[in-house]
Image 1 (cartoon, protein in one colour):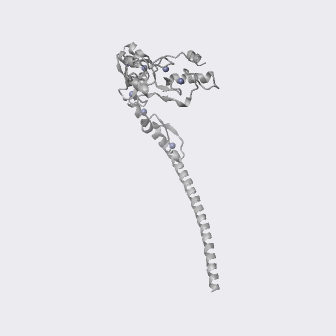
Image 2: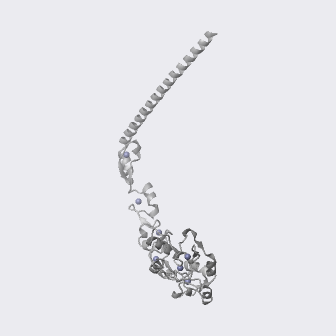
Image 3: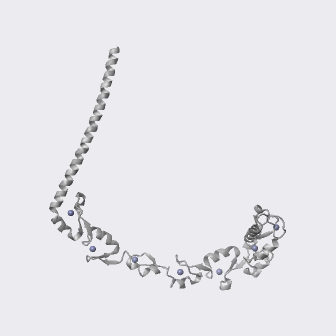
Length: 293
Ligand SMILES: [Zn+2]
Ligand SMILES: [Zn+2]
Ligand SMILES: [Zn+2]
Ligand SMILES: [Zn+2]
Ligand SMILES: [Zn+2]
Ligand SMILES: [Zn+2]
Ligand SMILES: [Zn+2]
């Protein structure tokens, strides 16, 4: 039953002998995984001392469990039951492979790198110009060889470019419309003044004659709204009304204060009464004591 699983799995070698130089191939010829027929990658030892790539072994066990969920997995080579908890990394083999000279996996695309196998991963992940990578510009989903990034940047909509005015980095995609939001873009206010967009808020809050404001006597109850340029006119027209509002406000305020004072007074009187009672009872107590002697 185990052979049928292996046949169904159709293993592909993760690492081939011809990815190493001729000198190194001599040392590696025997270090071949029985499952994928490639050079060992992360070799492990099963409970009956057979060696496989870690990944190849996992694939085998997982498929065994699916096919025979209630059976104990058997070694694909000896058909003996496997002790699954007993896996050990076979570092001796790993150490031999690490020291061999390998080609880059992108040799077929033109990479001429040759180096110790232990350095190969870093070369491919960080240096190899023939390695396929995702575009380095955030948001772009294009894939190409690392060496093509520069050429791609010319057309990549996600390349960051600096706005000369505000010095912010903006994607090329957003650049054409950036002037509509750039804080350092000069804008004309309807009042005729020209300033940077970032000054607009302050201008509106403090000086623009075309901004609607609420009457400064609002706290006294005037709810009139008008453009800032009409403020003087409103103040002139509403002198009497504002005076009335202020008087009314003051009277209200006074009444409130008086009520508050009255309440406070009552509280104090109550307090006083309580204290008097305490004094009285103390006096009585003392008198009683004196009588006793
Ligand atoms: Zn393998
Ligand atoms: Zn075994
Ligand atoms: Zn390379
Ligand atoms: Zn891109
Ligand atoms: Zn800008
Ligand atoms: Zn303005
Ligand atoms: Zn007013």
